[in-house]
Image 1 (cartoon, rainbow, N blue to C red):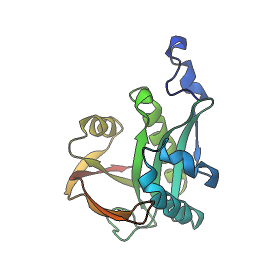
Image 2 (cartoon, rainbow, N blue to C red):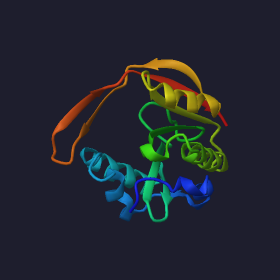
Image 3 (cartoon, helix red, strand yellow):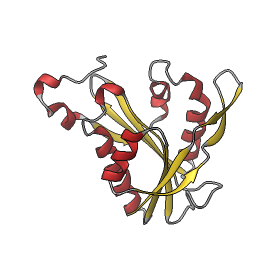
Amino acid sequence: MSDAPDLSAGQAWIDQVIIRTVTEADLPALEWDGEYTHYRRMYADAFYRSEQGRSILWVAELPGSGLIGQAFVQLLCDRPELADGTCRAYMYAFRVKPPYRGLGVGSRMIQVMETDLRRRRYDMVTLNVARENSKARRLYERMGYAVVAPEPGVWSYQDHLGAWHTVEEPAWRMEKHL
């Protein structure tokens, strides 16, 4: 599998990108060749929630290259200001592989996710963006999101070996009315 698009054909490759929901068979590929193996349990938990209808997991797949992006959406969580199960959803774990960034993959993924949420009668999307991630913040602002609050960005997860980790990533909460 190639790690980079064939840019010699201009942007024609982007028309081949398939944005779809995750299947169980996709879970190993979400680890991105070992870079995110430590999130294996989180991915399995997110997939379980998607099977229960509490979340939606999206991927961008480029035939011949595999998964090149992902975005998860929680429909309900323990923080109703993020996702309340009826009108507000929370996007997280949004990433695009480096060779494909800035080429429209992320924008298309967000558009597909928002269209699906509108169909489900959600009218608000929230997300958190790391304060130092100015490129992602600019993308979200171009897509109509606005900063509404600071977030401490402290969360914990259990890695693939069973060890617990705490992450401190100060962030901005952003929202968009659909």
